Length: 318
Ligand SMILES: [Zn+2]
Image 1 (tube, rainbow, N blue to C red):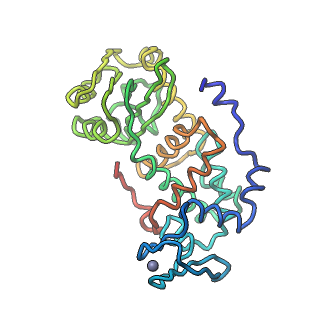
Image 2: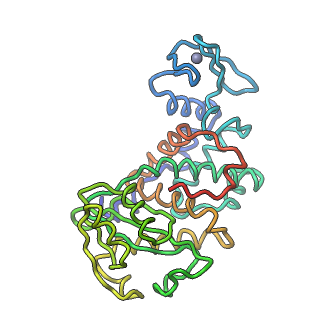
Image 3: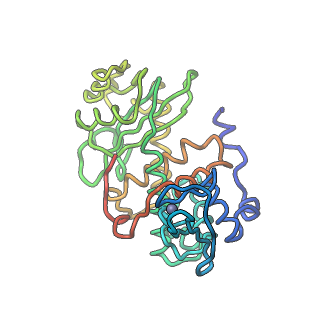
């Protein structure tokens, strides 16, 4: 799809959103459909269909006829035993998926009408679900790869490599045959040989042509069987303007806009993996803005519970 059609496509408008997900029951049914698309499956014993339902404190519960296990539609998922109305969760998902830029917890607090701490937890649970579902993303074919930093200045060129208070990350963009951006992988990691070997091993599949600016460590791609189109640029602004890197440089530039317009004093180092996953999740679903909320709902019910303690710990699992 040409970029202008991506940018001007019809999203899920707020009136449509409220028609579909305006009540607790509608949100509940959306979760049931996402979690058990072929009918109830007991999370404890695996028995299907045979169950009774009841309500406790307003929330829908299932009781398995096989083992008597009881579960709500949210238990065992990243929603956990949330007390927050599902309508607020869905509103948060609507904002995060329809926004062009990342959404700050402070903004979410105002939009969904909860305290800051709740907004922060809701946001990070949504981001963690995005990260988990995108962790399996693999690129193939022609892939532009570059290194970049969060918390630094692009205009400083590559001189900032290795400087402190910046989070290095790898940006990779799979392009279409006519050179348009298709899918992306963003991974916070140092630019060491081992780290890049891990990146290519987990995030790409052959056949692969890696287009990079010649930084030596990208040559590891070649050792893994990829073709390597190396262009030495000398860094700085010249490399940004090179046609070979147009897709990845546009994405990096957009990431900086999305994050700098959202977070002012953010702890990039601690949560970079989630902020980048948020960008990646939206980027890889930008062709169909109307379907992206449903995609996030499925990611949420597929992700395991994440207690508050776990969500605050800096983790780099990728
Ligand atoms: Zn059971």
